[in-house]
Amino acid sequence: MTWPAEIQARAEAIVARYPEPRSAVMPLLYLAMRQEGSLTLDGMRQVAGYTGLTSVQVESVASFYSMYKRESVGDYIVSVCTSISCHLLGGEEVLGAVADEAGVPSGKTGADGLFSVESVECIGACGGAPAVQVNYELVEGVTSESGRRLCRWLADDRPQVVTSDHMQAEFGGMRSFEWGPDESEGATGPVPAFGPLGTSGQPS
Ligand code: FES
Image 1: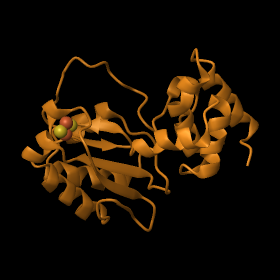
Image 2 (image 1 turned 45 degrees about the vertical axis):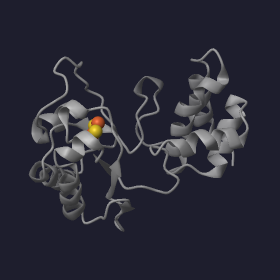
Image 3 (image 1 turned 90 degrees about the horizontal axis):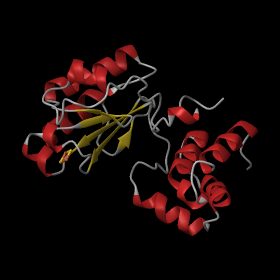
């Protein structure tokens, strides 16, 4: 299946940002995932065509990173870190509370397609453990109680955009750093946004 002209134009714009087409493999994989709702073999073939890599090489990249989803996911992917720092500060309990509140076991997507819940390895926010991401937007210092409130907010308000800044203020606790830039764009879906390239939001 050939991508629509608009998606092809986005793919070409991504490739044009790099000295070597193969360097565009990761953002192109996100584009493919966004386009098809999950990362399919056909999507990876398309990426291979843009990058000059073989399909096997593209798949080897995609299979290494858990953020590339091979199956459809919910509107909100809630990722709870259970690596060592978060584990020591209650990450497993946060995961249990989130899964319970979302009504979705860890590693699964709910039947209504609202939530996917997953346990993830270190997401680079150890100083603000336990750390959680919603659609890859970070919240630090989450407790079981605030994790439940976070899920209730998502289910009740169904925000179209989630931002770290908002979630940190409402549901977060201790942060790793206080000097990070304000971040206003956030994520509009379960795929990193690549806002400047116009790939955020649902494909038209
Ligand atoms: S161990 Fe959880 S963010 Fe690093």
